[in-house]
Image (cartoon, rainbow over all chains, first blue to last red; front, side, top):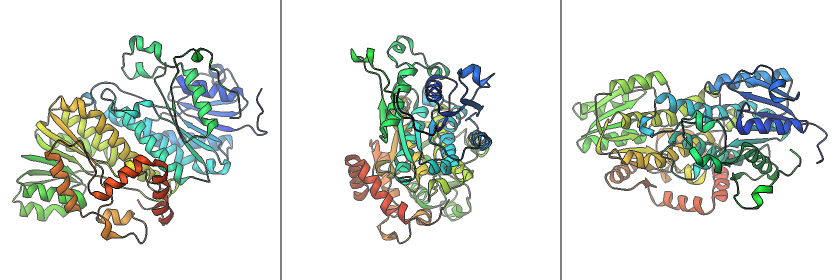
Length: 246
Length: 253
């Protein structure tokens, strides 16, 4: 078992009802950290859902960015958190199709969930991150690497986060760390929700567990920008997450 | 020939509108306050058609699109943009919401609906105005830089699907421009003479829009900055911090 810091960390993870966010929330909670998880859905009992007591779940729909922000601030206040050690902004929504067929509502919805909400949440909890000398981790996508005619708006929001991380990393030097991780295609519900047919390609996607492990390794490494993709070699069969602090 | 220019009342938008009018275009000129366009309307004998709209508001944007829904354009320049400078955490939330609305939501939804409703003629062009910050980062305006990076990514993604509908895409990455807006957000003691005049930039943009260029880094210094940013991205952003972020006074939005 890895050594653990004396104080359990306060960790906020958005988009934790599903996919990568859910795996991350459970992973950190299982190591004894306090996790505040957010999501769009209503959950019956946090404990039943996550199977552990140190996750608290709140509903915060990021399609209303400022509203989601208020709910998070309120929840942290109620928990009495004055420090935030790790903020993982993971929630995202997508839409697939030709850009000229996309409605204005779809454009503004994705921008709100993927771009505006993370920025407003980061701004709101910034003082608590500074108190702890914590880390802000933005979850991007490898979609930012090239032109994406089939999901232009989604790629744009993630490219925006990439640029945001670049400038904010420089601004926050000495106060809090800013990182961005870009996971490759992952076997989550996102593609289906976005109306994308992935077919057999899905077999080649990373599992959310693998993506979450990669993100945790990236967080430990402290690199300001990392791309997380699966390997297809022999080693990929046996690759396991390294246990470590945070 | 008809053109659509957003943010047409001041700065670069005004220079673009003026040049287009001179070249014989009818220009639908969109801005939040259109009073400043009165002289152009008179001068052009009505070829300049002001359309008042607040691009930060979804309703206002929808009304604008409705109002121009029966018009087609040869050239669309999505120029409107605002900034918010200072420490990231000191700028209030409503300022960020406005910034993202004007710089990102408006151009993306306008582009997709104009092309989707076939309001851009065959052989027409959409021009997106990103920023040189795409190459070098912009500590002190991290959300502004983020919106411009998103615009650059969107423009790159839509190039092919729009081309299939006969619409070209040009992305412009201008450095500092000599406008009232830029002056407001520049650090104290910045040399105004070094910034590009909006008239000069407007010329370069319109020339590039006629040709086949996909991207435009206008001017020698912008091209140098782009190269530097590509070769040493970390160093470029650190330098931007020293020359801008460290010298900024209070938040400005």
